[in-house]
Length: 257
Image (cartoon, rainbow, N blue to C red):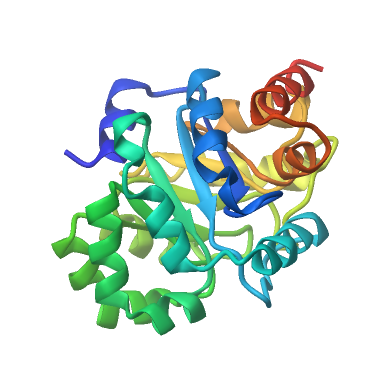
């Protein structure tokens, strides 16, 4: 069974997923960061593929991508780093990035490399759902790779139900239509969006991301979905604190405040 599905079968609530950019702050930090997150009890990790034009990302993740690219991070380097990851890391791993580097690598080659290294899912924010269905789903399914689709407050009910019907793993609920970045709280409009999606009684579990950085935003996400995804806050801490274990501990402390 795919590790993502297994996680959501075993743990229904309060799942915590963390994003970081591969190759940041240093080229060879990928495995140490993964191990540190697992040791601290993080349930699932999104490994960011750096890209020169990350349109959905805020300034923190954009800056980390720039540093990672300057450090020499590429998809080939990342897969080389991950070739033995399953000897020490057992939690679900997801690659998150943009379509351009994946297409340059070749989509089938990408899926094959994911399967060979133990990657469980992929998030491509700029992959249109129609293109996914027509051109990519069959290949991803063949390699047992979950393609995770995003929804926003502007996504229609019809589209949400289509995504729910034709994807597996979980649905990534973007908390707002803006770019990534830490927020102090979620206003009533976002809370209403969470409740509206909750009321749809979808087949797939949902994870809420974008803006989660403290106890208030974490609890709001956990009350309205299976769990929360944290990105910018952790990337900021990785750039400020070393080694990775201390950055993870600082994240957990921030989530208690």
